[in-house]
Image (tube, rainbow, N blue to C red; front, side, top):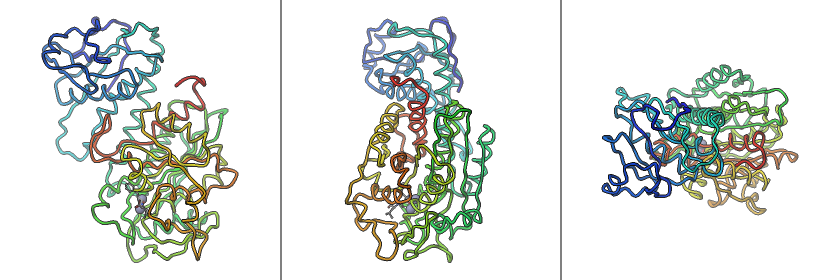
Length: 488
Ligand code: BES
Ligand code: ZN
Ligand code: ZN
């Protein structure tokens, strides 16, 4: 899908169809040329309501000027036109307080909404619109510069296309994406962008004394990999480590998952996939920070060599871990990756992304990511960034009592809590044991178990992988290091 900002009025642009966003049910606006027809169809301009008038060459979608509503409306229009014989569309520009937010939102919503994972379909029938022209027409007579609009369109394309690339990786089945093939794919995509790549194999992980990570990977015929990607711009404003859980498959190990719960566990690599997307987007957007993406790639399987409940493992920082459930494997992989990130990068911020717990989905529902950590300020900023990006996120608070639930009688810590409540938080508190004292306030944990993979369409998200975490963290980077302070 291509976008072009054209210095012409809407009526001067030739296109197969015109997309008209109806704002706040206002059918009296001068742009609405088919009021009578719309009323006859019972179209009131309610959110997500669509009226397709092929004989008029227009499609109307109800929305408000709130940026995520614009994304949803754009997706709705694109999806309605999917599979039909329209190659090009045109649309006016909608500006509210911020002159660029809504143009961006329209472009993002179109690209994200057009996505479909049809790689394994023999017949690919659902063609999307190929070209969208954005006119210099403005809904509310606010100032609008062509240059700004073009820049925002470029940014939106980078963020949305990267999110779609992450969706592709997560949706790819585990017989194609396993640690080695993921590492190869990450290396290819990253080096193509001029990002440094280092891949650690089992023997390197031994040397690094990553006993927790190695234990999780032991039963698999597919050996583990740690991928360390570095984007180093000149004069960086900060150094950031992004650590991603990359379980290319999570069968649960010997604490085997029931079969109903095992399906979709190809998506347990969503954290690592998001980390890859974030560093790529940051590079393309030229965000002036040094970023290190650390992907912990492994397969949690059963077999004669599997790690077991009752094993005691030694993590990279020397802490011993009593394994009581082999399905709580993500935290073991992340524990070593977090130690690695702190030792090798000495970062100003550490962000980890993981499909870590089913408990997070129970707590917040399947559309919302959990935000956890010790720094109120960092959590707050991440929540605000999520909101501005269109992702849903909610805080799950630590307290002084919960860490006790992880105590072990025989080792330094257990890999599961002794209580069945608060599992998302206790998992995060486990990770916190592997964050050095000096780094506690630099760290934030994002549990993306809910939104990373949903087996139904929602808003502009498709069936399957959503690319959760990418837009939220990229927005945080922009707000923190690029935008002037007052920008949303
Ligand atoms: N990968 C799962 C978490 C998960 C569950 C992600 C559902 C997405 C959807 C994780 O490794 C896991 O199995 N966690 C266990 C932890 C438990 C054994 C303490 C869980 O959540 O049940
Ligand atoms: Zn698991
Ligand atoms: Zn898992």
